[in-house]
Length: 85
Image (cartoon, rainbow, N blue to C red):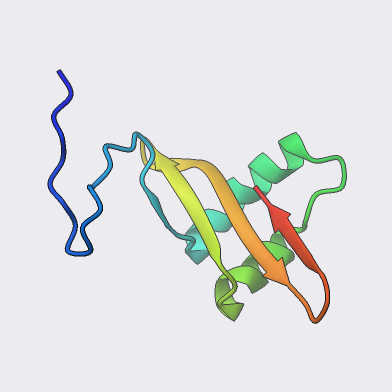
């Protein structure tokens, strides 16, 4: 039976997500690179993702059973943008 979760202070309901989403940490880079290599024919490097963690670009991971189940990076420049997920 699904039970409605309590409201967050901003009024939105807390979700019952199966994969909590949180900011990426340096320890996540290896798992992210493994996903990246399995999915993309021209993957970003481990260094690319490490720089995303340290530079402060929006970079989030979804966790499942203590590991990374997915990720999203919003990387933008002066007049262009690229999204990885």
